[in-house]
Image 1 (cartoon, each protein chain N blue to C red):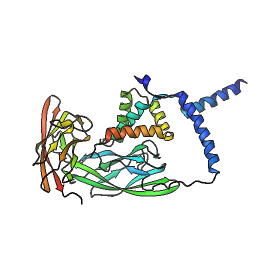
Image 2: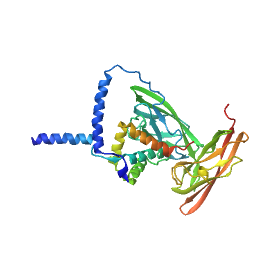
Image 3: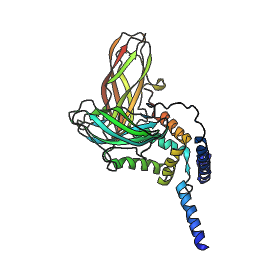
Image 4: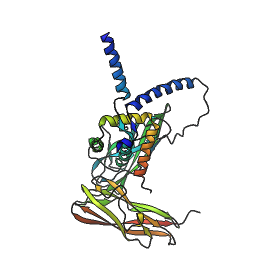
Length: 279
Length: 99
C-alpha cells in the first residue's frame, strides 16, 4: 500500500539539502541586485486563528484547550500569546515551559501556510452562563517587525448535572435570509467516556423545511458517529427558507446514541431567525 | 591518517544527522495525520497538558509512525511549502463543517 506513496527518503532529503544550498547561494547573489517591485505583505493576513470558538468546558471545571493558528505571508517568529481580558471568575494558565505566555506546540515560529496550536488551561467558574469570552494578545515578529494583534475567543460552557452523557452546546442557529438554503449545525459536547451511533433528527421543525445530508432521514456528527468525553462535534442539517414568514422559529431536536449496549436520547431545541433578504 | 578518517567520518555522520538524511517517512500519511490532528486538537479538551502529547503519540503509534519520523516530517514542513500545502488540504477536507 505504501509503495505507491511518494516517499520523503534519505536520498530525496540529501538531494534537497544540495538544492537548498544552491538556492541559498542564488539568494545571496540576488540580494546584491536591485530590488524588483514586490507586493507588500498584508499585515493582517500573516497569522490567523482557525477556531474562534473552542471545545466546550464544563462549568466549574478546568481544562487545556487548543487555539489553532495558520500562517500566511511569511514567518511569524517568537510567537507569544497571553490573555489580556477574561470574563469574571475565569482563570488562565500557560504551559510550565513557557510560563508567562503560551507559544506554538512545535516551536515558536509559524511559517506561511503552516498549522500549529497554542495550549491554554482555562478554569471556568460554576456561575458561568453558556459561554465565557477571552481576549488574547498575540505578539510575534514578522519581516523584522514586532506585531501585536488581538483575538476574541469564545469558550462554550456546558453545565454538568450528574449522570449526563452529553450536552447540547448550541442554542441558536443564527439567521438565514428568506429565499436561501443554509446548512446549520448543532454542537454537542461529550461527558460520558464514549457514545456511539449518534443520530440527530428534527422532531418539530416549526414549519421549516429540513433536509438531512444525503437526503437521509437523520444526520450524525461531522467527524464520526462517536462522541467522546471532552470532545465537541457538530451535527448539521439544511434549512430551505423559502416562502416563509419572517421571524424566529423554534426547532425541536432529538439526539439518539448508544452507551455501551443501551440506547438513550437527549431532547432539545434551537432557535433560527428568518430575516429579510439583503437588498 | 586513521585519526583524520575518524574525524571526517564523524563530520559526515553529524551532517547526516543534522540534515535528517537517515530518516525516511511516508509523506502523504504524515500529512494526513497532521491535518487531522490539527483539526481534532481544537475539538477536544485535555485534563493535563501532557495528555495532548500523549494523544498525538497514540495517533502516531497507531499509524506505525515513530517519533523520529514525525520530527523529521515537522522539520521538513519548515522548508517545504508543498508539504505544508498538503497538510492544509487535509485539514480543510477533514475539518470544514461547511457552516
